[in-house]
Length: 326
Image: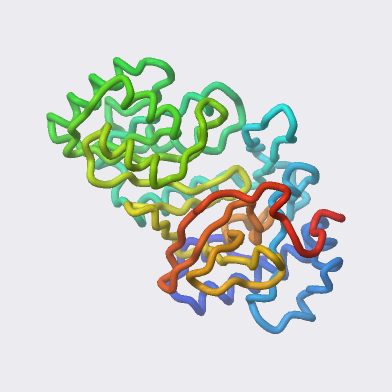
């Protein structure tokens, strides 16, 4: 049995690789969906020679199959926001404490002590439905901050504007976590000049606005909030870990998470650093589902391990072998 405490105590590349091999073997033997996927590709533990050969399961499987590496009943199930023509992803969480440990440790890794912040969450599209992993995380971070002004905002833009201005004037270290369309709504109604506030977007227009590239979005938000940098959080229903950008749209992962890029023409081949391709993610916190995920996002990895998110595949862009045949 794998000691899950080791996941969040990784301190070296060697420790990461050792635990990655352990979890790959564990999931091959305990996750029927991933087992069949690896068998179909003829990439089983005894056939692989390097970590780079470990198969990344298409994220779409979370929409159509029960992706679990345990016989225990899930403690909670997170669901993605869906549209009328797609199924929602379902991530069955066997041990919710792993998710809590992951986002708390990652926040501390990138931002320090949570109690030094007032956490404000502007996440209307997520608050309006059940099963959001982002709301689960934001609620806990709000509670962990122990700040009397921390809290959620739905439609009260005027109230949020007044609170942001007051807290910033008091010198309170504030973090505003918001979905992109809501942050744009806010700066269209109010103009700010914030000195002590971090603005962090979680991406996505959720059908409320026309999609814009991140560079254009950040330009609008920087001007509207009067800040020099816009921070970003990169996470998804199917993962228990998040990457963060503290400016310039360059994301970094916590030590138990790694991003690799695949060739867009051949999904089983890795892409070189500096070249655009599909984003693959190793998330060791996903021990009881699948830690090796091929996302639908397009991105670019840099030699220092940081990465950019440049867009998304649409169905016409997916080439190579048919990974959805199972």
